[in-house]
Image (cartoon, rainbow, N blue to C red; front, side):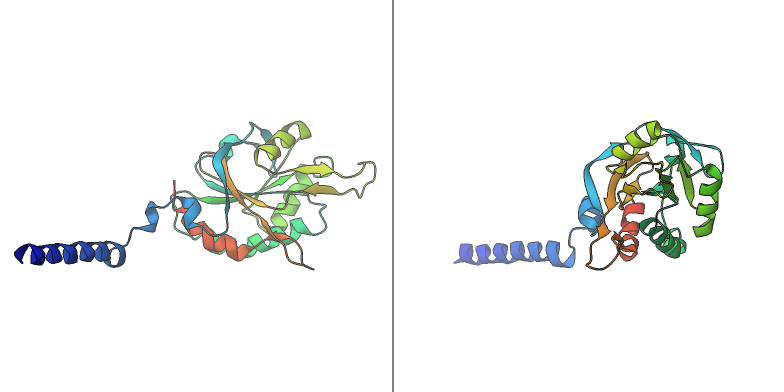
Length: 218
């Protein structure tokens, strides 16, 4: 009889311990991988090293891999003559910029616009374009020999859909917003939101929701 009572007591203690562990003191979400803590960022299986590059910043100074070190970067590929996706995306990023740069983080955040149309996007034009949206943004351009492998290493693409002899030629390009960590490696991207009848651009509310988790990491 005593053994039965002791067994019941130990069973109650065991069940109580499990309850306390799961309900009273559940496991911390901080122990989960970042990919499971965020809702919207499409994480790459592994962080990707960017191709080495030397571009020209919109302020007419060199812009290299070193300029990505020690900060988080939201990168967007496009061109200043883009009729829709680029101006809308940059405008919407600018709207949330005060909020996302105010997020408590170990490293600062920057926004980088990479022009893939070096023929028309001179430094002067790029400087005017960047300052129109937000003077804190970084713009850069350079020859295709530098840009193409860089864009590809981001997991993005661009292509000239027609001859550049036509002054109004268009450039096809990815519309995702890429996230680059303070080590200068690409970790993932916010993909465009696909809705019938609407422009396919990344959702700024989704970015705002995931960024505090992303920026809190190393």
